[in-house]
Length: 173
Image (cartoon, rainbow, N blue to C red; front, top):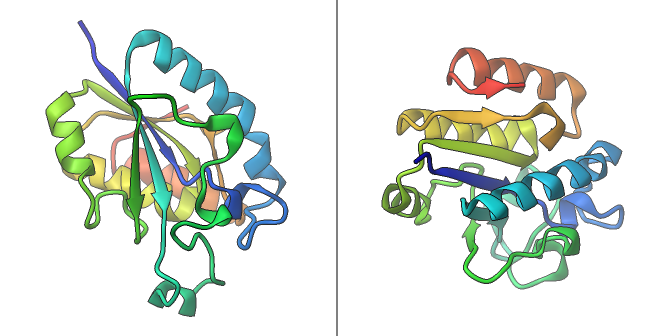
């Protein structure tokens, strides 16, 4: 029997809400219904569901590159209400672009042993792509649905989809 995992990347108030500190644009709001449908399907199938949650310290050095956002414990770092985690679903705080950097994502996936990992969320060119790269480095077959990812930069979004498909071997559809 096939086991799948769903990783939901940074669907957080600061990125998805128009009042968020680093709003990714209307495209980020547009993917919510698709992700809700995928989440429901994965829940029905009994898949492993993992939420990656940007959760920075107030003085994180990333704020020299981007405006202050997703400070741990704040409204901005919370998962949007439409995608609230259910009991038993993993929320993994992270402080860098890749969901694997200084987190237990590697151990969580290794314990579950998925045959395929689906990745959705924001931003395609940053945290989504870096996490997909980490999955490729660990030989997980990966799927990235176009309808489930968004970015504030349309050109970077397109490049990232191509890179994930061509370099990382992800199925992008």
